[in-house]
Image (tube, rainbow, N blue to C red; front, side):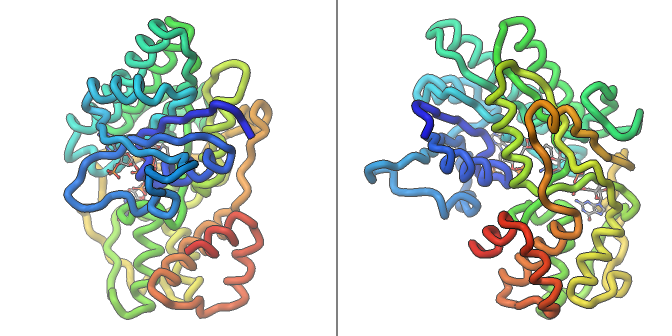
Length: 357
Ligand code: NDP
Ligand code: GDR
């Protein structure tokens, strides 16, 4: 077990925050997370690992705060004195960022700067070193400049979200170069799981498939079905974040599977899994279109594979099937196709995920 490893995570209640917390707790870390005050509970994804802080031996702690509130970020940093910070907090929905561009820029762009500046001052004053991970995105590549996209591919962001992530990326690089901080940018391509937010396309589809089977939904309204994404499994991707912070020197890494698939292909596999034809259910609604679209993402993670020893372990078909399985299970349904269901469980992480549901 490691000694004195203390992580602070922004965005701990999100998909990645929840998997990263589990992973770090398994590695022996003390984990602190920043949560937002909301009028209804927002801790569903971490409830299973949360324990009463009055108990002996508890290693997960939550603090109220917000990336738009610099004073609180500084106070939490002083209190927690983390050795590693993972900045996963974000208004992370690309379509929504067109509706709320200013807030998105504040939380995603300025929020990262606030955190970096807080760390700079804290390190300067105490001499304690903090390793920093910034949750960068393949959306920064935006309009296709080259494929596959890698660390040296120029950015061309196509949404307020992506513009803010580019700003956060360069602030992270600039703090590394100006103040000798251990700061890394992960440039992560889309990664999904049964814990994915219900309005992202993958989960929207798999949830709809289960609800259609259950007779709770008839139609599925969607936007651009031709967009292509490089989709991986979130558990594989949080491991990469941690690996970046264990290196001797800070650096930036693309994390991707190297395969691309269209939204249509996702629909086809998800509906086929329950022996349905997606064309019978999917309808078009222009409100799911974006003012500017990212047509094609496919990542080259050679650098991460060579330097970190990271590689993805879940195939596209396994990912889609896992997500449909999980949504069926959540509604108390079993897969209509036992053979396919068994083949999904080839991977130990998938078995664990489905077992825990
Ligand atoms: P989610 O949308 O699932 O989670 C976002 C998290 O950020 C939630 O915990 C949310 O809190 C929190 N949050 C939102 N606004 C603020 C704010 N103003 N201050 C503090 N916290 C805030 O995202 P993912 O887990 O999927 O992604 C994690 C990070 O990685 C994000 O930064 C995302 O942009 C980035 N990313 C994600 C990829 C993906 O495919 N999943 C790919 C590349 C990058 P609450 O629960 O209260 O809403
Ligand atoms: P993305 O994910 O924008 O890639 O950002 P999303 O799942 O929202 O969209 C993927 C593609 O599907 C198309 N699409 C639809 N999308 C949604 N949400 N709803 C629909 O009905 C629909 N129909 C078609 C979209 O146009 C798009 O082309 C995700 C987020 O997690 C970001 O935070 C992260 O940085 C990137 O992935 C990498």
